[in-house]
Image 1 (cartoon, rainbow, N blue to C red):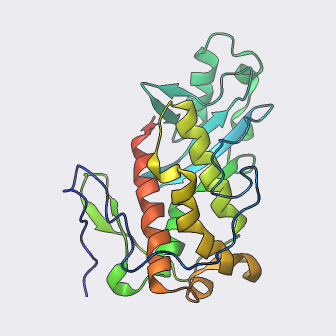
Image 2 (spheres, rainbow, N blue to C red; image 1 turned 45 degrees about the vertical axis):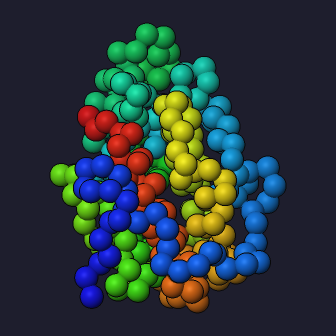
Length: 241
């Protein structure tokens, strides 16, 4: 069967299916620890104390940015979007051009490269979640041209369960610094999407399609569909340089 089409708006306006095929999530799914330690925590994480190079992967590309932390002003932004650079050198040039850059202007390209950067790979996690969906329920995402296309699943991929919360926290941090509010990151929405996933991935110590196969199809679709809506929204908040 072909992938389910989007039902919440035509390409170029809206997101793919926002609800799962089936009823509410399974009852009794564990809640994350209090205080926002799990994905559903509603507060953005505290900014780091010093510069933190970041390697960000979205469907469009992989690029470099930097969380300078206080008092460096946090993430580089322009026009309400996060600036992400395809190579470290243009990021360095941007940092050096900022008034009061201080120590940031003395960073070297190797201090921003893959070996030094914190990685956030939203594409990889999304492909793993999609691989757990039945073939007829593969989620869609917005391609560069604006049309919705099926996600390419990764049935052999695997990630640490903690990666889910880590990526949600970074998305919250970015949206907070951009002054954006996303319903996708409201605690209840995150809880419904991620709690069943963590209920099976946590004890297994890995997040992959085989482990997620223990969940009902509705829970698997809910998690993957929610994730790809978040990726689409994150993508719209990024300006590539």
